[in-house]
Image (cartoon, rainbow, N blue to C red; front, side, top):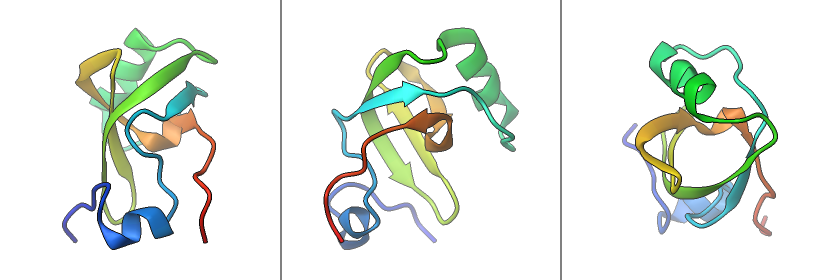
Length: 87
């Protein structure tokens, strides 16, 4: 399945955050891309709020970039956020 991005009909229906949304880092969890886990441990502070720059939703996970660290990728599952209103 190709990724879906903001503007895709499923994106809003599934209630993913849009760029500009504030995300709170809750810490790492088990994740198959170890580089993303290392990036998070090296760059992020648990409980700190960051700003979503970009998001790509794949079949079982979402890859995000943050305004504060645009060169690093992280899984959305490391963060808490307020889900947009919707269905």
